[in-house]
Length: 305
Image 1 (cartoon, rainbow, N blue to C red):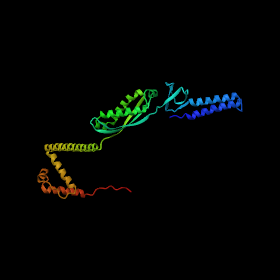
Image 2: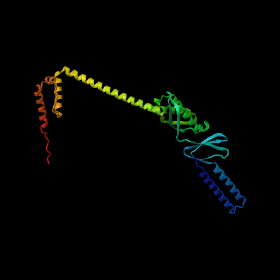
Image 3: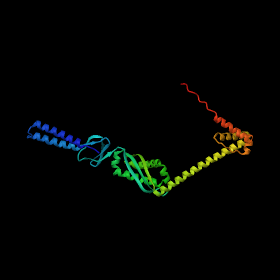
């Protein structure tokens, strides 16, 4: 979390060297009382400075207690405390932290046991509250998250959990944030990763989904057939009111049948009489016309070289 040993060692060496140089300037052999006093004083000053020097990284805050009472928050960077009188019981990380939590074999509102995995993203926004108002805030957050997840599962139907994970995540975020706000902690988001159900129930739900898809397919097919039947009824009413249109449609159907290389076309005699084709001779004549039209060479434009 922090690395103040190198800074403290450097300060100790600098102060000790300065004291040694001063003592050497007074007495090069360090035999006089003044030079020895200088050495002792600078040695204790170096030890005191090294002991009192602390360094907090950019994402850490130090909680400083003086004689057991809260004194201040320190950091980031270098700072100094009074040895023995001051103490630092907590170094608080203010970065966003992710914590995984889960609920196993928890009954939903419709009494289905499920396993739910989720992830909590949170950060300390008030290091003083996190250090003084709750013991081991990391463990407290973990327990608060797990109990909140169990409460939400017990109040939610299985279908709602499988279809509305975003809604469940939002509810969890609100509940956990309300519980951790007095501790100086802000819940950024909650994400439900997975919802596991018993294998037997999973197979039954798969069969139910398959049956539902087949039912929808049959409904769509029936609706299509109904629409086609309505169109047929509409066409029949139109042809019944207009015999000429019916005759033209019948002749067009016969013409299309002859165009498909059919050598024999069976036509009821009543249809031939209604179309006025003059019996078999008229049908044969129509077939000859179609054959001649097929045999006619198609015009292909020449490309100029």
